[in-house]
Image (tube, rainbow, N blue to C red):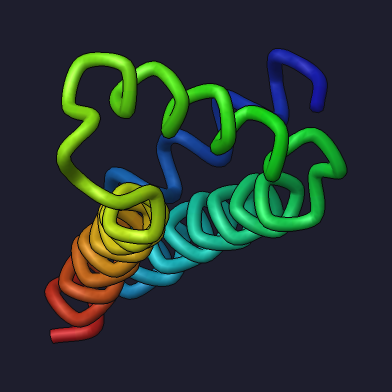
Length: 99
């Protein structure tokens, strides 16, 4: 975008509330798509099982009395919680902009 086009867009966004809301929805949607893409990359990373094993091995060294599956479940629960929280925040932002 040229500086002149950017200036016109910024002025339009300042003056037009409907356009500003649509622009914010677009930005929020882009953030969501980026976050989803990163999550898919993490889930499909061939090194994820190895990294999770390393994390589990680290904690088993400190806490040998707990089973490995407990740690695996905790890591997945944490990952799912973070993703759910991030999704909820983006959804809330979109809903606030739509109103």
